[in-house]
Length: 272
View 1 (cartoon, rainbow, N blue to C red):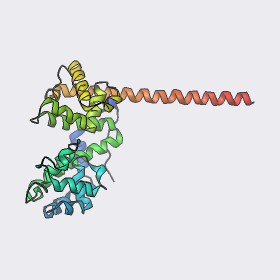
View 2: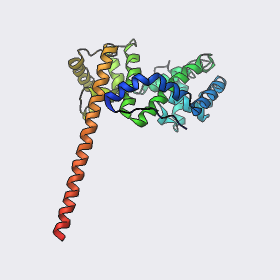
View 3: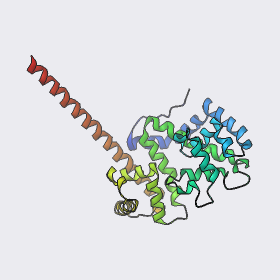
View 4: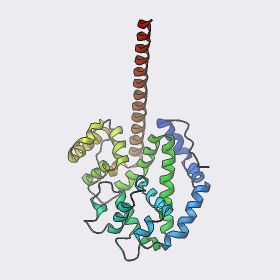
């Protein structure tokens, strides 16, 4: 039986409960029979994988590899994933370096098929490295099946500090945020920006995000935004605004349904 995370509340209240019980729930999730079986198979097999083709041809190994980097949706795009892996990350013209979603770059960098004569799959620590990422991401997916806003909040805790610590300019970090489906969604909601901002030129988007972040949080530096105290406020703002938006949406749907029902009743009365 698949483990289902316990999340009794939505919004920020749900986040506080999940945060308090995270360690225990993650351990229970990892200990499930299904996860233990997959864990054992990956540990026993990954060291034998020498090429990108061998990886994509093994469904269970590929599932773990993609899941570890949040790329589960690409499971059936084997030719594309193989190309990303084979071209590696060191060549500036490699496919992974051209894609706006840097999850592909992280994937090919981790495996090293296109960068080294001996891939990183041969390292004694490799299985632990990938499985830790996989279990973390899969727990997020499980939480998302209960409450997707909480899944977004979890990904924020991982991705923003990681981005903030990188040796990149503020501008480059904001381009990364905009190019990340999860980070852009969280910031757009937390900063109360309309969805239409995503249709603007990327430079315009960056200016809007940076200007609004400066006004709301007193800084436009992702490294500062990822500090624990600011990250907590950002997470709270995202969850509260997301919950409010959901309530407004439900309320609007109820009003529309009520109007339709009333109109139907009036037509029936007229016929009678």
